[in-house]
Amino acid sequence: MQPVIGPSSPSCSSTSDCFPLGHLNTAECGSEIQAEQKKDEVRANDTPAGLSKMRSVVSFYLCYLLCLGLGLACVVCVCLWNVHWRKGFAWDGSGLQFNWHPVLMVTGLVVLYGMGAVVYRIPLTWGHNKLPWKLLHAALMLLSLILSVVGLCAVFDFHNATGTPNLYSLHSWIGIAAVALFAMQWAVGMAGFLLPCSPISLRKLLKPIHVWMGGSILWLSIAACISGINEKLFFVLKGDTTGTQPYSKLPPEAVLANTLGVLIVAFGLIVLKILSNSKWQRPDSRPEDISYSPLLQEENE
Image 1 (spheres, rainbow, N blue to C red):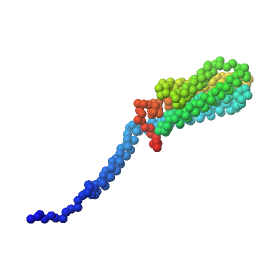
Image 2 (tube, rainbow, N blue to C red):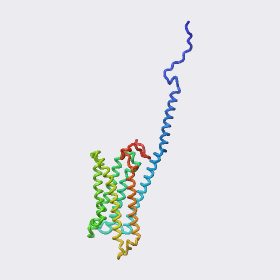
Image 3 (cartoon, rainbow, N blue to C red):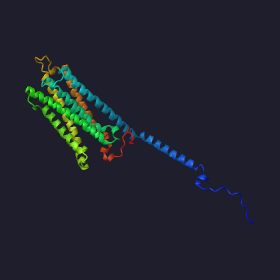
Image 4 (cartoon, one colour):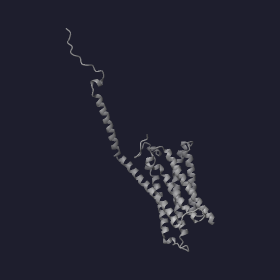
């Protein structure tokens, strides 16, 4: 006798046919994993390291805004001093031509120089190509150098027109040294960091020297401006027949000029603070921390 064979069940051509909900479970597991990964990323931002980075970024922008405010205050004060008390500007060999000298030196050799020096430290620029920021840095420094040279031309022309000797004071020595070093710094930086033909080994050699020289030039510029302000006040506030009060009486002009000196020093200290903080360096400038990703950085497309 042949065994009785009941109705055969349909054969399963694939696992999904036998388990029709299997692919749904797999999709659900994948979405759950992605959701968990996103939650882990969100929690990572709440870790002490993430909060530390956030505090670092916030403190940078506070210092940067303070730097901008102090720089603007320096320019306003030096312009107000020479417009209100020194009677404005001209280019005729008179004292009005000399008034260009402090305005251009403070604006160029201190304020623009300092702002150009901290361009690389702005966190929002870190996720982008470095070349445009190199060009901006070079352009700001070149503009600063041009203003400084024009400021020197103004004082040399004034001295020659009035028969005053050039380069006899400590102020003039410090100032001319700062501008000369600045010109060499810009030329070497242009050749070493912007020309495509410059080798990587040369850039690595020049970089620490370039950074150190940049801070030194800023210090020289501040010293030159402070000594120049003091020297100018001693010359014009003698309390003689000109009708001005002596410097020792601290008239309003002296108060404004002294305030300008304090603002210049404060501006320089903030700039040097930004430059000296290793946490605010551009990540590609720190090989040991190359994987660092700054906060508030947009993704590169």
